[in-house]
Length: 407
Ligand code: HEM
Image 1 (cartoon, rainbow, N blue to C red):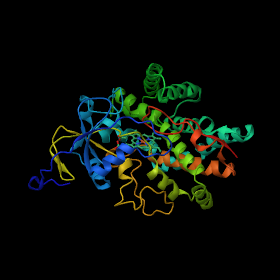
Image 2: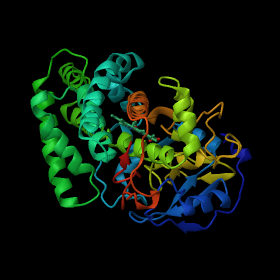
Image 3: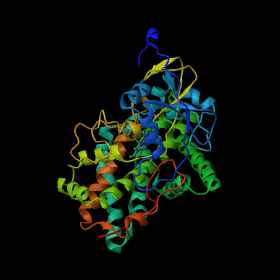
Image 4: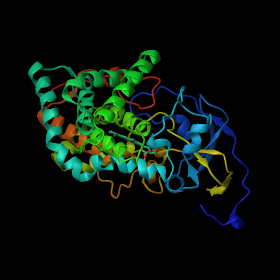
């Protein structure tokens, strides 16, 4: 990418490709994305909803360049009907994902303290206890068990509520709204649950105004009290964080499925021992197709050249972190899980200012989950043939609906 207009090339724009929402099983890589990657570094796509077309960047260097370049903005996306995956599109004020600088820094600063490496270190023993309780229940009841229902869904919900500071007496209510919102069935019920959850969040932040504490609701109450963010922004900030735990459920669901269907991978992971499995987890984070299609677009705020094409001011651009994670220039033999891959600078948590707020939290939970399940259930294996595991349908975040195991 360059800023020198003299270097702008006149490559003709590639054709606009339809990218339908596919229901894919297991860790199958989206064949449309694979085709787009073959077509060139920068292609044009039309997704099932919204209007018009958008550019798509798939190479590692271009994805990093676009996501680090302030000439591509997110706020403008909220004012447009950009071609997109999601049928409904109602961003709230305060949402980190749609904020540009300086608002993005101002908003992120309000909650950053709850997600630092040090905060996650303090959280770890409490998270381990929550997980041990769940696994104790599984062991007590004996095999078989559905790991999604018994561990992978309840654990991230409980941990997120710790980080957020949801009072014990409200947890059941908050978790049932969250489960409803993230379920892939019943848009109406999900809408009602969203109203319930956001109403509760507004009350909770109001109640904590001027309060002290290190949890997210205390930090937000204090930031509102100091006039750094508005109450509406605080609610818009908190919502996605409260719901964000589901990403761990589905990503770890895919991770365990891969381990339980590949004996060599499972053996290598077990052999490393607890606390030393980081490189395997990173390789799986790189490899796992975390989401369907692409996430949120960015809009060019001025003309920018990317991979020999001029992206004109006002045009939308998507990046695919999944594709960047399979770029052979950076990851030799990218379609193979290589537990010894080093270095492994994957982009599973994104890049640039919008880098995942919950990345350290998600990594911590993933480590705890894999270590605890492998070490406490020594003979862990699928209780059904791999092709009988049911996968999420019509979904943004991919993962197994259930994971029946025995040990
Ligand atoms: C953003 C991945 C877990 C909260 C993102 C982005 C990715 C991502 C790729 C987008 C970067 C972009 O827009 O360019 C993941 C993965 C997870 C995970 C793979 C689990 C394995 C979580 C958790 C939370 C969370 C547990 C919160 C509790 C967020 C938020 C954003 C975000 C708030 C928006 C950040 C911003 O725009 O500034 N995540 N995430 N994520 N994630 Fe995560």
